[in-house]
Image (cartoon, rainbow over the protein chains, first blue to last red):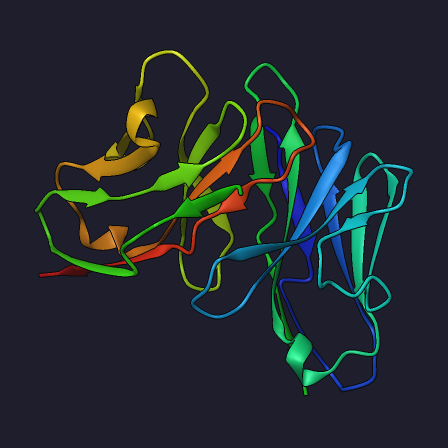
Amino acid sequence: GAVVSQHPSRVICKSGTSVKIECRSLDFQATTMFWYRQFPKQSLMLMATSNEGSKATYEQGVEKDKFLINHASLTLSTLTVTSAHPEDSSFYICSASVDRGDYGYTFGSGTRLTVV
Amino acid sequence: AQSVTQPDIHITVSEGASLELRCNYSYGATPYLFWYVQSPGQGLQLLLKYFSGDTLVQGIKGFEAEFKRSQSSFNLRKPSVHWSDAAEYFCAVGAAQAGTALIFGKGTTLSVSS
């Protein structure tokens, strides 16, 4: 239980275009979704926290106009990388906190974004 | 400041040997502690977690971790490493409530030699 499905797993886009990454909670309601970015051989850096129905809270240094996060329902959160540039190439992972008896976190399988 | 420190960037262990990956944390509230494993290009898999109670927790794949509050540590151990354990390991800390993001350490790369 508590599965988050993340799509696409890989995407290649041209500079200047936008890319949308989706994360869906399949068997639970994700009130809060977290978006992380991971550079090669590095740790996961929190980009933003999104709560269903409200604006996302971005971490310091993360451009909110470039990384648009929408959490319109309890089962879907999206991250749109707008006007992508090569420096946006990275591995993006979503995560949801699971507020059940066995509290924990569940992660999507990640999206490898390459901007050419 | 809240942080997680994994002092070892890269560790190489012989297959069949024991393993210990270190993790120290700094957290203002009661910490919930996690260990995750990540294979190249993949997402994160939870190995184990500690919320409260017995400070020695058992996880999947034969891993265990011990919470030591006095040392602010949550080290991961395995008595006998298998070649398939080669991966990136992340320690993470979170708050005792849903809706709070995890803070991750920089990770430790485990290589297993034959």
